[in-house]
Length: 138
Image (cartoon, rainbow, N blue to C red; front, side):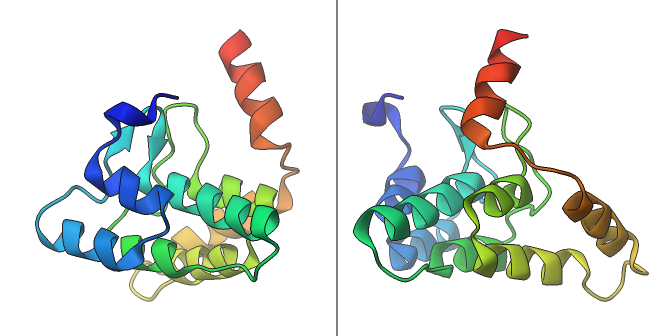
C-alpha cells in the first residue's frame, strides 16, 4: 500500500496520534473514510494491535475510541469485507472488542445490535491476512 496517497486522517491513525485524529474529525474529516482498502476504524485497530505487538507495549484503544466518539460506524466493513469487530477479534484487541461490543449493545436498539454481535462472536474467525488472500483470490 502506497503511503504517499494516504489522507491526513489515515496518516494520523498510522502514527497513533489520537489528538490529530480528533482535530481532523472536528474540522470535518469523514470518520468513515476509506483509503487504500481500509476504513479509519479498521486501520486504527490494526495499528494499535500491531504497535503493541511490535513494540512490546500495552495495547491502546485511544485512536479507536476517538473515531467512535466522532461517529465512525462500528459495523462498516472495509472493501475486503472485514468489520472492525472481525479485526479486533483476530488481533486479540480485547479493549476494542469490549468497546465495540458495548457500543453495539447500546441502549435504544432493543438489543438487536447486541444479538448480532453475540452471534458474530460465536463464529470462528480466521486471520485477516489469510482471509484477505482468500477474498482476493475469488
